[in-house]
Length: 453
Image (cartoon, rainbow, N blue to C red; front, side, top):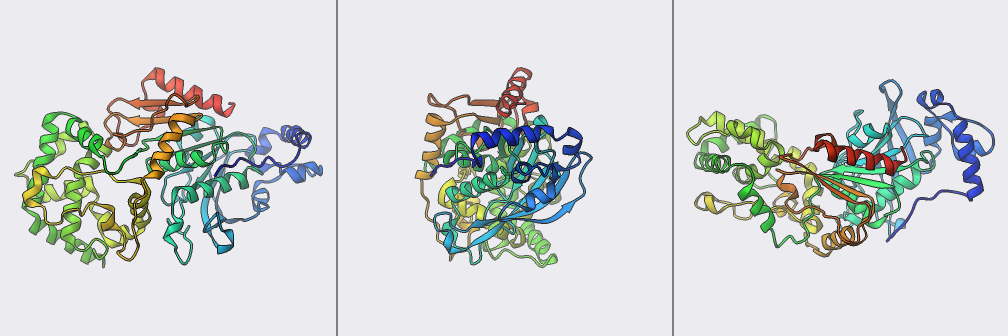
């Protein structure tokens, strides 16, 4: 399935609209005005940006919030079909935010891959381009959920169609160049959108985006974790894991007491003991992903106090995320991992005598048992093939110490104007600004060239 932006009208009308848009002063744009094509064609002149976006079919303004000088900030929803192939089956409202800079500026389409934040912020491409920013919530996350939920409607192609509809709808107001971006799962969603709608935007920047093309062949991840950082740091992590599992009775009791004090529990995963073991097994991956070599001195020794071990695990592996109040919010994420995206493995050989819940780190542990999980390997292989053979104006920015990108997207012989950059020693939260100076200059210049800035 492919598609493009609807530019609405003939070349002559587009030229006339362009001339009228050019007459809107920069001061008016910064004050939050926009030229709506139909109104401009009638000679009505600039109208308030809120009026312009409220005129977009299916778009609803939930609220306007205070914004920094020169900006306006809106929380929106856009009506989406639950199944883009069968729109007659009903729909849902996808939550968006809009940080308006001016209709003559580029627009950055951003997703985290999960829920959308309703606070004002700008991602790096929007900062570099001084652009508008449209942030999207992914289907089934937050409030962007069909009711009743048909889980078969949660796949990468349906989510890509959501993004296409966002671009198509708001391009009626923001007609300058569009750039798409996201990090981690959001970076993956950015690539998937381009796979199915390659002409929606003029370029894409994917940060720290995993590319797990074969979920049954995970040697790249394991090899990465066996070699990243120093031998001393890797040994310290293994020692901390053993100490945590050897003292699990007291530490699990503490974990359960914490959940009880909040009225929380572990019904989804099964028990505090299983959740604790999952956190311990995931700790090295999450350590390298978020912290890196500089945090090695803080890894507790095996003879450290229970407080020190528990505190380190809670901070590193984020113990609260395994309790029901948080874990239930991420069921869509693990559903996607278990059906299309694939999941990273964990090393267990050095802990084999201490493991009580074999296989507990798999996505099945995080998805209700009445929701079927059937992995479809063709989806990731198709996207990887498209990137290598047809990918156009794609930029990948990765961290050299990030295990998430042990299998990265790589432009291939059929890619055009596409680039892979790496921040030496970088973790999962890398930015273009952290690249070596020459690469940062190249990446920034490429982004500006794509956007025509």
